[in-house]
Every structure is written in C-alpha cells, then in structure tokens.
Image (cartoon, rainbow, N blue to C red; front, side, top):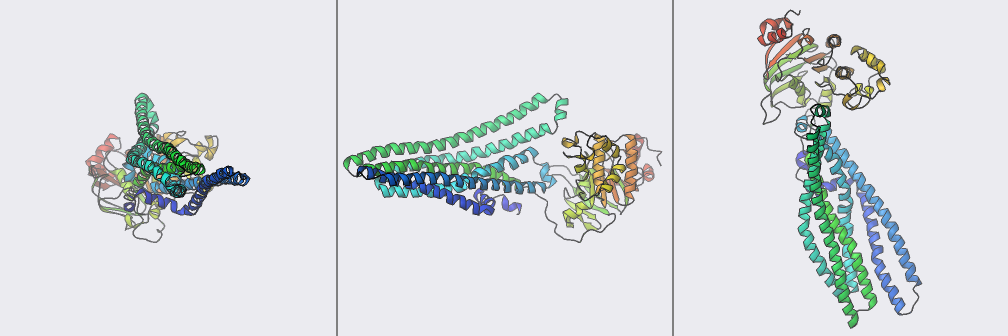
Length: 582
C-alpha cells in the first residue's frame, strides 16, 4: 500500500479495511444482536396480549410462558452476540497493531529522525486500542442500532400512529442538538489523542536519558514537564468526555420527555376511547425499548468521532516515508570481499539543514582496511549511513561491487554488511541473543571463536549464567567496553563481505584496543573493512586512509604518505604523538 493512498482516505474506509478479514465473525455478531433486538421487540406485543387476556378474564399462562422464553432468549443470545463482537474487535486491534508495527520497522531513518519514539509507541498502543470500541460500538452498533430503531418505530406506528408522531417530534429535536455536539467531540478527541502521544514522547525522553537527568539534578524540571504533558492529556480527555456525556444525556433526556408526552397524550386518548389501556401500555413499553437503540446510535456516532481521531493518527504514521522495494532485482551476491565507490556524492539530512557531503568521491577495492579520519562533523559516519541506505544521497552514486546500492534489494545489501555503530547498542535480553542477533544460524564453534577473538570469553566465564545471562535494558549490566566488544562480535558472526566499524574501539582500554586492532587486521585479510576513527593508533596499519574535512575528501594515502602530504593529517598525528609511527 502506497503512502499516498493512505494519507487522505476517510476514516470509515480505513476501518472497513481493518474489518474486512473478520467480516464473517462481524456479520454473525450483528445477526445475533438483531435477534436480541427482535426478541425485545416481541415483548411489548406479548404484554399487550397478556393485558387483553386479563381484561377478558382469559388464562394468562401461555402469555407468561412465552414472555419468560423471550426474556431467557434475549439474555442468552445477547451474551453470545456480545462475546462474538468483542472477540472480533480484539482481532481487529491485533491486526492493526501487527500492520503498524511492521510498517514502523520499515520506516526510513530520516522519517524516524523527525518523529518522537514515545509518540509512535502511543499510536501502536493507545490509538489502536480505540479501534476496539469503534468496531463494536460504531460499525456494528450503528447498523444494528439503526435497524432496531427503524423496526421499533415501525412497530410503534402499527400500535398507534398518532402517538408515534408525538414521539418523533421529541426524538428529532434531540437529534438536531446531538448533530451540533458531534463535531466538537471529533475535535476534542483528536486533541486528546495527540496529547497522549506528547505525554509518551516526554516520558520516553526522560527514561531514555535518566542517568543524565539524575546527574544533572534535573529530576524536578523533567518531572514538571512530564506532569504538564499528562495534565494536558487529562484536560483534552475531559473535554472529549464532556461532549460525549452531553450527547448521551441529551438522548436520555429526549426519551424521558417522550415518555411523559406519550403518557399525557395517550392517557387523553384512552379517556376518549380512541385506544384501550393495553395499547397504551404496549406503546409505553416501546418508548422504553426505543431508548436502547437511540443510545446505541448516539454512542456509535460519538465513538466514531473518537475512533476517527485515532485512525487519522495511525494513517499519519503509515504515511511516513518507508524503505521502498528494490527497483531492480539481481542475483544473490557473490562470495568474497566487496568493493565500494562514492561518485560525487552530495547529501544533507533535511532540506532545512546544511549540506553534509559536498561531492565526496573515493574508491575502496575489495579486501583490506580503509580508514576514514578527520575532525568531528567532517561527514565520516554519514559515509556508513549512506552505504547502509539509511539515507539516500541527493546527488551522485554509491556503488557496491560496481552496482548502485539503490538497485540492490535491501535484504541482500544489508546481509553483505556488518555494521558496528558508534554507541554500540546492546538490546535487552541475554548475551547469547545479542551475539546471534544478526546471525541466528551461527554454530556453537563459530560463537566460541568470535568470543575468543573479541576477548569476551573471560566475560562469559564470569557471568552467573554464562551466555544466557540477561544484560539488562540497553546492556546496562555490561561496561562500555564490553558492549563495544559485543557489538563487534555480533558483526563478525555475520561473516560480512563489508565490515563497517564506526569508532569501534573508542571505549576500550589500551590492551583490548591492541587486541581488537589485531582482530580487525585479521578480518581485513578476508573481507573489506572500513573504519571511522578519531584515535589514529587504530588505523596506522590501514592500506589506505581517507582524510575528510567539512564534507569533502581532501587526501587519500597511507599513514606515512599522509604525514608529509596532508597538513591536517599531520596535525592530527602530531596531536596524538604518532608522527614517528611506522
């Protein structure tokens, strides 16, 4: 489904898409609800017959038995219908959550950069939950309630048309009032759902940096910010509840007015002999019964306004740019190290942000280590993001094995790459799950080899449950250096054709950094390794070093060559006491 098709569709059409796979169960629930309504509609007629039998001094046993059977059937069928509808509504919510979660995992990184994760989580949890009510109350409720309402009015017309006319005047007046209230419910519901998302974003912001908050003594300030977002959510929700309650009470008040009016007008008709007492009692029972479908219809309309606001937020999410399918299919990639070429690549993260790459060009042949160095902000990490296609260049081409990366199927492209991010994230779960995250097919022997290579074997021996030890949220039970080694081990287990290491040794001590340098050098003999490093000691043995500055490549060469050929590299080396390194 294209994003263009999802952004402007009416809420009812989107809702029907979610409901379509469950239309059989939904139809069954609707039929059961109508059967419940039919048994209820029969009760006033049976009551009229019972009164007529009493007036004529006839036996009322049959009428009592029939009334009892109708009451039991009404309760039993109503319970079954309610269960079927609730189960179907939960299935709709599940389908929506699955679809939305799948879409979020395919979002472009650029789209994710412009959104708040807490707000996206609210859309998956809070907004999709509202689909439950809108499915049962709006979709089914409007249909069954509307049909029951029409059927009730027909029965009332058969009993006495004059009393029906009086009732309709009152009901239509209430309908006009409710019509004025409904748009306000819609606006308030949209604002309420938006404020829930803002509250989730505020809370996620604090919990994601709780150590920094505590270290800065900012708990009070952040607490006030989250409380303010929660209070705004409360205000908007109360506002929506106010209008919904007003609509519901208007419907209830109209039925009370209708009852009093029918009682007065009907009593007068009984007094003149126009109708008998049994007819008046039957009509009054229908007035009572009319309250249920009217409230059902009103609830359907109000719930639809709430659901429409949630659906609009869900559709906004599904309109965010997602990674497209590959335009050109190609065979599975060949084994062996990959080559990388940048041809006059230009890139900026957003239209309102400055250019990051100003015509970056370089070539990395298969196999060996290539390092990227330069001051902060030079665009080194962006090189890796563009290779992984987290972002797309605005101009120029990026080639992998001579083919534009935009022509590679994304799964094939990323399967060929091992990537260690700058902050080396570790996911909640066990150490084993983290190591095998990108290589579930790895054997125990391969796992042991990588643990030894990255010097994680001693860590595993110390952990209480070895590889099956939980590492905590974001790996909080591991040190920074241990998390970095886990990330490197995870990348090596994939046996990549292209290994991207972004500051992969920045948190390691000198001993482990030296060991990892040897590991990377060994890996470079069988694959292509690209390294971003501020510590030049990591890259002095690289076959080529690309010096970047202000989004441009200013020099390419070996450590020795660049010491004399490029002043910036020489300055970096002098600062880090590497001018005499071989």
